[in-house]
Amino acid sequence: MTATVRAADLGDLPAVIDVVTAGRLLGIGRTKAYQLAKDGRFPCRVLRIGRSYLVPTREVWALLGYHDDGTRRPEPEEG
Image (cartoon, rainbow, N blue to C red; front, side, top):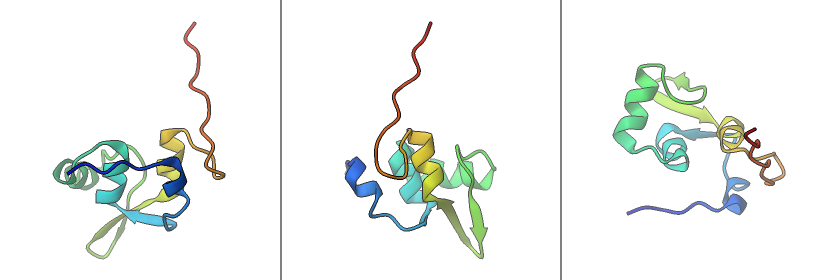
């Protein structure tokens, strides 16, 4: 099952999210997300708290090109 996340939903997320949720937002599956986090290769910062891998939500937003207010930055033009 694939869930679609709307920009409006991003504002409902807590300050940190688990690596599975972050992976889903980035189009990465559960197993690959954990593997990347464990290897230190997840596309944004991962915090290791006890046995949990947590990702700062703002860093996922930035990676996706969203501002804190939920607006998306324009894609850079190639030229």
